[in-house]
Length: 168
Image 1 (cartoon, helix red, strand yellow):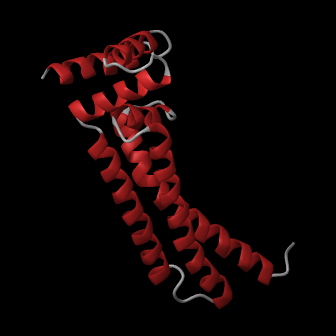
Image 2 (cartoon, rainbow, N blue to C red):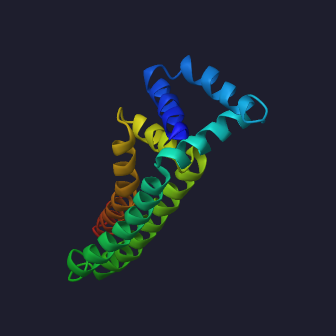
């Protein structure tokens, strides 16, 4: 219970004033836990916060769901949109590109989670890129492989149909 309250305080201070509050609190927590101040201290505090109150499960599940949804979207697009086309070469290339886009989107979410951390603070920092919090971060992790699959398939189809018409 004490760890959860302390972690909640750290997360609240992160949201309240990320440039001033967190460094002092996180560095102090890291030193109190017997590690060096600075990066090691803040990393230890992040792991403590994620283990005490959750966030890591949400991050990992969002990543897994996003990857599955990306490949599911690619399969649906390939079976419906790119199944019966006038330009068969464009459809075949778009089918490959949808799966490649889903794979790149999934790897991108995994790399992002690896960089920011699989915890609540990492998820909040992902969401903060669009002005949101943890929920926005989870949504972005789910949406990224889907958007990548749709964009790659659509762009490839457009490119090959344009090329078939003889346009530069």
